Structure formats: structure tokens, C-alpha cells
Image (tube, rainbow, N blue to C red; front, side):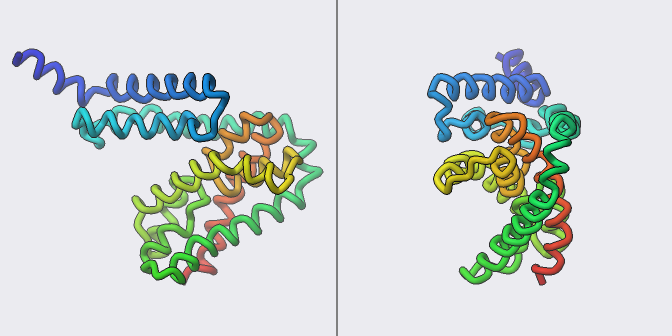
Length: 235
């Protein structure tokens, strides 16, 4: 019994458990998504995140230990983001042709993202701290954390809002674009990248290389635009 307890204590803090749990549940979620006919409510990232939360609570696993064990996956986000340059390079001719559209979409999208995130929260009675945490929701997590603290928000709350923006955009974004009649793959990619950063870009690549390339470009430019615009719109 003591050996089993010692083994479990070692395993619960081992990177092996965190990696196996994360990769295994994501793989299972992806298979479920495929079998469901790619039901948007069963998006792998959403299902896998929910399952991981359940497992951590049921098994009473320490989240800090889990996050530390899965650190290699977090590290790989950097190279994965850089790798987005490859499809963007392949679409370079289309990007040059659409440069005015790209810049216009990013600037307008970033402006209204910060405007809605901050001022709508304030008008609905939210605190300034809550509003400041929500303002950078359409930028990627590292940028959002830094910007939220800079304008008086909380980094952990900013991470939560970034996740909500990404997941909700990936879930309902394509349906909304279909509903309003947006068919141009470049426009669809830009919309997903501006509103839902990395998660939206992942969803855009499922539609095609052009959508994914433009979404990746929009994601990077939106982070830069939000960094500038937020200092003007947030007191």
C-alpha cells in the first residue's frame, strides 16, 4: 500500500502524466469530433480542455504540477507560431494584392475589440479592473497578460477572456460568416485571426491554406495593433 501511495505521488507530479493526459485526451477529442461530422460543439480544444479540468478535479491533481509537467507543450507553441510563416510565404502574392484590405480589417477589428472589451464592460456596471482585463481579449495570451497589467487589469483574468474569445470565435465564427454571406477565403481568414487569435487560426486552417495564412497574419498584426490602440482607448 505504501509503495502504491509513493508511486502515485511520484506519478501525479511527473511530466509523464501531464503529457499523456493532455495528448491522449486531445487525440480522443479529435476522434470524437471527426465521428460527429465535425460538430462545432465538439471542437477538440473545447472538449479536451473540459475533460482535463474534470480529471484534475476528480483525481485531485495539483494544477501547478500539471502545468509544469505540460510545459514542453507550452514551449512548442513558439515554434508552432513561427511555422505559420510557411503558409503565409506560400500565399505571399495574395497577401500583397490584399494589403489594404488586411491593414484595414486589422485596424478596425482591433479598435472595436478593445472598445467593446473595455467600454461595454464599464457601461454594464463592471469595475475598471475587470474592463481593463477584458480589453486585450483579441490578442494572444502573452500580449494580453502584459497589456492587462499595464492598463490596470489582472493577467489571470486576461488569460480567461483570451481563451473565451478564442474558443467562442472558433465555435461560432464560421457559422456567423456563413450567415452574413462572407465567402472570400481571405476575408474569412482575416476575421478569424482578428477575433480569435491562435485558436481561430487553427480553425481557419481546417477550411483551407488561404484562410489559415491570412488568419495567421491577422493574428500577429492584431497583437501589434491592440498594443497601440489600447493606450488610447483605455484610461
